[in-house]
Amino acid sequence: MIKLRRINNKEFVVNADFIEFVESTPDTVITLTNGVKLVVKESVDEVIEKVIEYKKRIFEGIIFNIQPLQKEHER
Image (cartoon, rainbow, N blue to C red; front, top):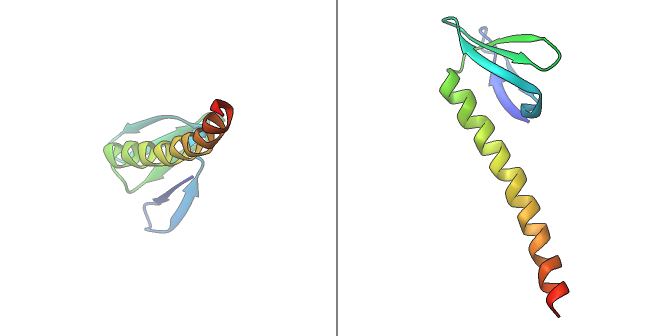
């Protein structure tokens, strides 16, 4: 989940896995996989960075959980 701000500065959270694409029109518009469009204050680059950071946290958690299993299997 990533935290974003609507044009009126109200914060909300969106599931980054449901983002289909992000465009600048000039406002930043996020289109979700279900067709819902969200207009946000963040730039396209800021949204991309938030998604990357979110994915890093997810994958680091997976790797962290897999490593003990690999060590256990090596015994």
